[in-house]
Length: 320
Image 1 (cartoon, rainbow, N blue to C red):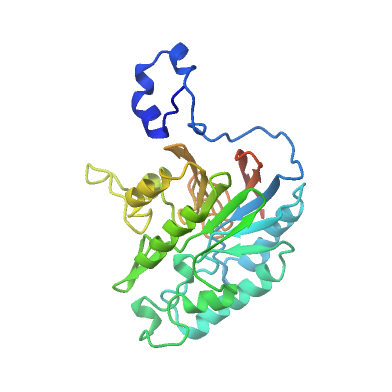
Image 2: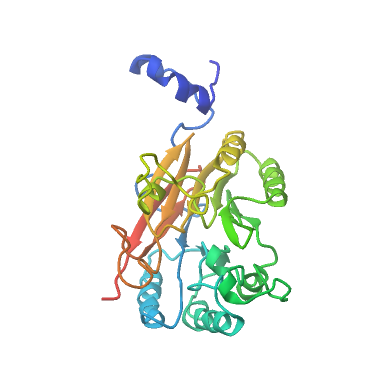
């Protein structure tokens, strides 16, 4: 029987009866399975996705994050590692050198020194130092831009990939700097690297992609009065403006299963072209003031199975 692609299924599914659709053979499931808890076997494992810590000295953030760390340590089974989606400090785009160092010092003492699991870091837009006018930076500083975050997070590169069992993990740098601000997109160097990285990944290995800003998301439409003009307007700093370009690349690789992000502080799940996109809230919730809209402070617990299936759940916590 001839196999058909995800795209062909999407275009023609409405034309088939249930009986005829049941006879089709797929190269991979149209919808990756967010499976019920079937227990982890030796080739499967658990990870945690955290994002948007926004640590600083106000709103008792240093004390409140201890409740998050307690929730993390109580997980059974424990995670193999943590994917940290960025925005580690409250903001360094508009702050001077001393204030930025103070925020990173709080991050180091209250988070980095307290975590018992390995952490793979992603750079968030608030981790980029000095691009705003209020920072007083000229751009010639040795740690200007992403260089300070790369140093503090102990990164060798601002984007990278690694393997664990039958899964391949890709960590992207979403923050494209231009004219003193940022847009959510990949620069040309990174996009070409991504093409090669995907091509070099065996098709039998499942792929998970982490970015700070969502590649695709539904909750970005609710993060502000985006319909006030009579049309939906989503800023390019909120969701990847190159999402169509990435979609065209992703559809060539049937082993891409999951894309994780943060940035919005909201939680949603969506499936597009057979890939599951998850925007996983924020550890800081509404910047350490409680929930943000309907999303409580929290993080995602992810069980990854050797057959490419997965289970993702958003776990809220409270410091009250």
